[in-house]
Image (cartoon, rainbow, N blue to C red; front, side, top):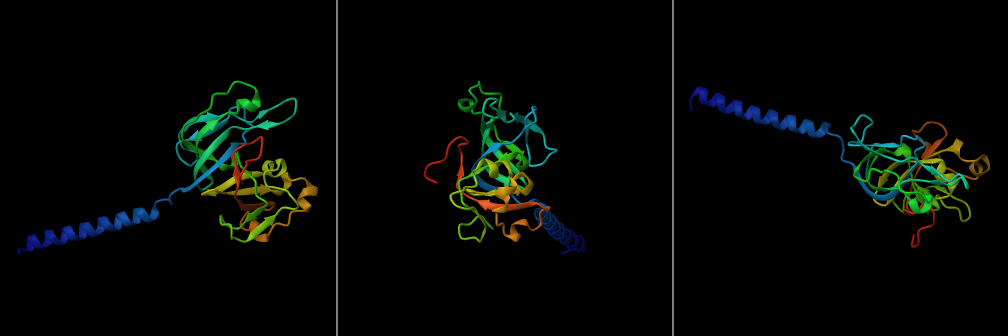
Length: 223
């Protein structure tokens, strides 16, 4: 083998190794994949302009459409929210589809609603968990971080209004609660594990809950 041939061969080997190293580094720097889940949530948006649905899980991504804000029944004060299916979560953002305005509850024609697939912030989503305990992880055997008293469930108006969606996995949802949004008398009865507050701003805690109900007016049978 001539010197030039050997040099070319060595160069090819080095190039191949360099490309492999670059590809490995690119994979290492790539963001983790979204976590799949299958739950139903409701849009907690009060801005009359509605909630933006984006093409990717970040606030700078292209806007694909909007979801209507909460509709308020002036007679009863009841809040009617747009219903969405959630298929994945990624750093506080949620991939949604099949959004639907509930004209059966509003008694009004359905409002224009983006029904395709896209991403919305969990700060504008709430869920209705018909569970009595909140856990450390999305696992029925995980430590209990909060158990409600008597026959109370996490789907009460008080708990839902004090919450927002933080993450999801399979049929489970991680929900963040704000103490200040829970009436003082009810807050006194909540024995929240200190671990549920770790790493969060003061006055907040997070729990994993299951038995997520997809009906905002009634309970879900079979949960």
